[in-house]
Image (cartoon, rainbow, N blue to C red; front, side, top):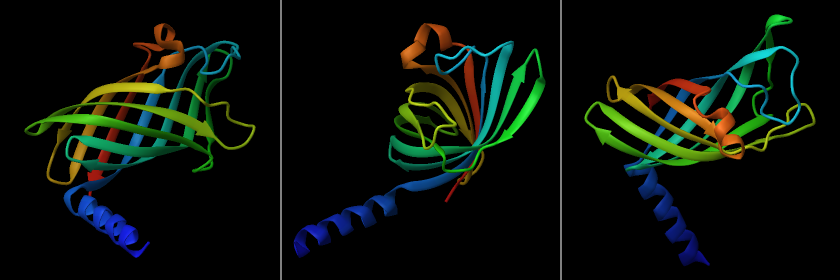
Length: 167
């Protein structure tokens, strides 16, 4: 048992030494009727702000994001901001990145989940995008997203922008 623990510890230390963590502020904008099967009256779009923690190891990345503020846009009520308790909803993902100097292409696939009755999640987004490194630490990304369960209805209607810092 001690040998297995030592090997696991060495693998974790090696991956942390050669990889990098990043923390970013993410903005997701969607123009779609609904992510669930419940249609919304006069719904035009949604804008969500969240935090994204990612770990990059070579061309591979794994991350988790949680929202904290949502703006619902509707024809009936206009803009309605809603605070979301961080940690009540999660988006976990795994992906690849192809670096070309300061620019890079990236893609990932993930899954959403929520705790509690308020949020109806459980869909699987796929994201493709581009990014740019401004320094060894700062970067920006723009991704086009689609929900696999409703691919034809969501392709070209969901985008996210992220600005982040690599540690």
